[in-house]
Length: 196
Ligand SMILES: [Zn+2]
Image (cartoon, rainbow, N blue to C red; front, side, top):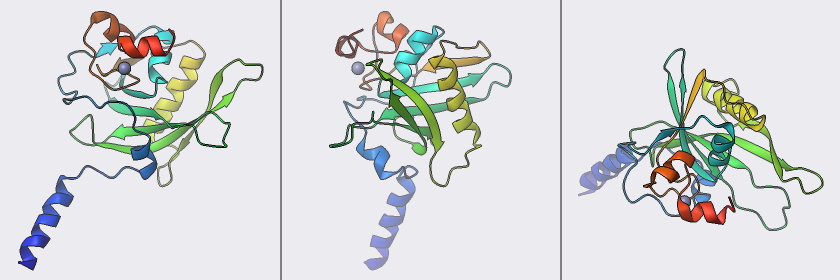
């Protein structure tokens, strides 16, 4: 009997996706897509830096970067933290990298992006991308996203790197259905809430 229990536990462990940090789990917000974003049929290459920037920081963006030179592709999730009581600083974003077969679940936390408030009510400015504990600061994925953020905030999106939205809303994670939503990576309800 005890043996059987052990076997079950082992199976369960195997089935579990790579552990992501508690922090990453608690900041997942909004409605999860009902299905997996497997077919990527609604994914779109975003080429307008302003559109890409808004999508990227929307709070729950799943995106891919593809090197035009090598064809190497990385898929990420960038989830925004929640405001904390007594902390006036803008909440950070948590970057995780796809490490398994399920592009809704198999993410490992690799870095945090911090923002500062721009004095005089000028909004927020993403300042720093810091590798997570145990992740090499020179990790290619961390460097790639730091590079992307640096370019996009300056209004640039070099054609050497393809930037793809996943087909799920960058803010709430619902699957996008209309061409208009797909083009901007944001669903209609979130679009209104974001005041775009
Ligand atoms: Zn949405």
